[in-house]
Image (cartoon, rainbow, N blue to C red; front, top):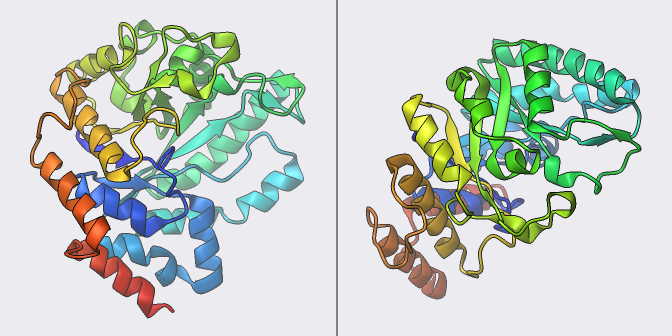
Length: 330
């Protein structure tokens, strides 16, 4: 349980690869989440070398990405989106990722539940075959907190039990679930649903976040998503213990949005996320203030990063490499 991914949610740098990469390198993440639509756009506009240059020059992986396909769309729309699948897989392979995320919408515009379920089973199976050839896995992402806020008259996957059923029905060894612990609780999921699973087979990625004890599951708000460890009887902490027991080897991250922290400085935010992951992995209290306790030089790194931001001096070699690569394309 040591492959740490920096997700861009809430950081405000989703479309600025060089900033996200610098944050990940400074705070010892192994990979980053990149917007695949943006990456494909770069590829189509200026070529593969340009699209991949920042990640390759910085020597960091594309840790994960959302598959930019609507598996509940009409046949015509889905066929059009599928035309980019080979490019997506090629970019992912080039940049070293072994997993992606397929988001399952909780409501649908086009198909009633059973028809939509069958559409998803067939379409995900077809994509999974291509991903398997590329040695990649797909994690189905439950979006329970979106219930009531997504366009469409038809109910679809809204609970933890339903997302597990879909994954098991698809039946591919490289298809599992991307487990966001906030969404899992929002979808009435519990730890005992995971304890009997082969974790390394079924879970492709774990995103830690807690649900506010005052949250109304029928009317969830962004502020109801807490950092791991901040929730009452934290599911994140209990899940981390289960993952250690089962020797989980997959990717981990903290699932944030713009309301899960109050710091303005991004380096402080990312230092906090890195620290919480380290504490969860070690079985320690993740809520200890990272600004008060220095872990493997992270506090020093943070101060250095702030000073560099103010003076523009002494940037990391990786950041200089990225800037040089960017300048070369202008």
